[in-house]
Length: 443
Ligand code: ATP
Image (cartoon, rainbow, N blue to C red):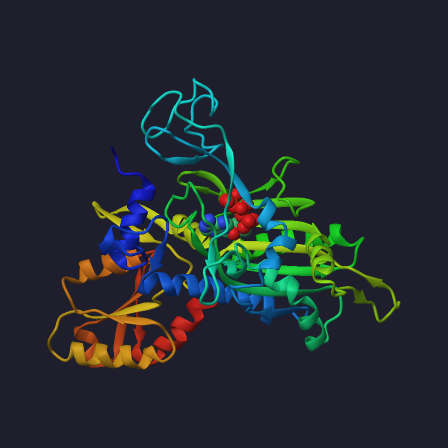
């Protein structure tokens, strides 16, 4: 079978240290992935950018870092215990399990015409059954029903149960938001497509609390803001589109919802959602906890439960969007090159420093330049192999600038800087490199 773009991306991700399969030496753990030295930087850059735009650049949003483990009643009240499930079918022959809407299934599960997409057996698929996606674990020394707790399947509930704490301690007024980045867990049944659908992942969620009646304008506001933010990541606009949920697609909590979809190599798929959750969560928590969660409007003395507009993005899926969007295969002077054209501010390494050859004072000067830059930029020193191969490695890593110390450098303290995308080289004074990089990395 010819290698697909995803195969190539997965192999580049491993080769360059972006993403490894979890527990690989034991054969891997299904749909759990680890971020290597470059991957952790890329994801961190995305998360920091999100945090900056949500929390630091806005007066009306506060940050939060709630625990993964929460009181089990949270999941009863939120509807996740009853409603957070996927319809699944089993193959009685090969024992594989699929989502009932798996496009590979031919025929109707439960009927003799249904065919298993893995073993091909006809009539072996069971009718669809509901399967809860939450991971269970036990708290304390006893493994009994009373000690069951769940790994959160979304970060949002940590925000709702803290909404009054944040409101009162920060002295915010409605409308205001709470933003959080953290791990979430779902026992997905048909995971796959690399880091697109995993069982452990990170979400970047922001819940914006508004006065009932003003939801529509805030919904539109956040849709526009989120698209602007994604354009700022350098993602090609023609690869992004909106998908409004139909009545049958809406999650149990949602009144209206739009997905932002990206055209992945495996098709258009959601990677972020903007949801109008109404007062679904706050009213359920108010009822279940018996604690008043109403807001007292100081201007009008009115009491009300705010409505919530949520922006919910996956950090891993956004990283996959960024990687897919940056991946290029090009022909340069008759040779194939693979390059990640990441926006420089997102790139894991900002520059690589090379001595052209390992003699005549070049390594010493290159080391000095590397050490000088290291305090302010994530830079990489490489003196291994031909200069062409060193460039090629950095192209695959998405490093925007390659700084080479050559014969002239030791004479006049200038270096060449090669641009990853245009391949143009310019001479820059070594002492000006930090200013040069800062200018290029802005934005
Ligand atoms: P899907 O329909 O793909 O399962 P969802 O509609 O259940 O996703 P939400 O509950 O709206 O997703 O979660 C918000 C975001 O969290 C998603 O847009 C996605 O980026 C991320 N996300 C959700 N589930 C996963 C997962 N299993 N792996 C990676 N990211 C995920």
